[in-house]
Amino acid sequence: MRRATTSFLFIIFFLSLSLAQEAPKYNFGTMQQGKNFYLHPGEEFEIPIYFYNVYGNRITHVIITPENVPEGWEVEINPEVHNQTLIVSGIRTTIQENIYVEPTNATGDLSSCQEIISRFDSPGKCLWNDNIKSYIPAKEVRIRVKVPENETLGSVHTLSVMARARWYDITGGISFSQERRFNYRIMVISESYYEYIVRTFDLGAFFVVHKWEIISVVSLGLLSLLGFVTYRLYKKVKSLESQKPRKGGR
Image (cartoon, rainbow, N blue to C red; front, side):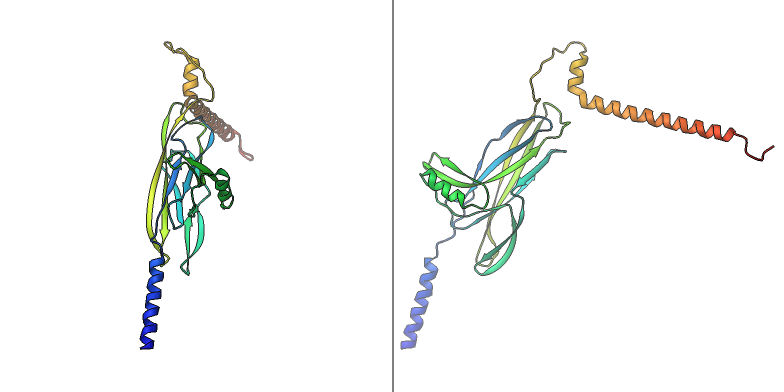
């Protein structure tokens, strides 16, 4: 009877532990700072995205990849994607991610938020949320964009960045995932203002608008001319050499 009572108490104990564990809550909080940008040819610019986790009870692991990158443009994510080793319920696993976002609390006190930020392993920022009248500790990811030197003025491009969030369960596997796309509209403009009245034909305005095409055509023409002249000289030298009398000849 005593053994049965002990077994029953053990069952109640383990059931209590199971019930005491809080159900998983997944939070993928983000803030996109700006959607429309004006950049000039050759410009390098950084766009921040913020990630936070104030309503969840699981670590959010985020991997970020650029999409729809215009031809010739350079796009980099900082922090870069890297291998991260986790111990999930005693199980060791290695994943790829740019950042992880641990659960934190929103606070009405800026200094408390900044103290939380100081413990982050990557840059962060305190975001004010007017709905809850509190600061939210958020991690920062920066998208570095570089426009080609020869990009056409007035051209409009759409750049996208895909962020995928993942959460892990007791087996060490992915229990849930979510993705979010951030779209940016980028217009290429001049570094300074100027204006021309376009008449029947304005050489100055034409050159400003089509300078890269003109430079390319002129360069190609010069290379072709140089090749032609070199070839003609080569043929002339060969012809003269063939006309020289050979030694020992009659």
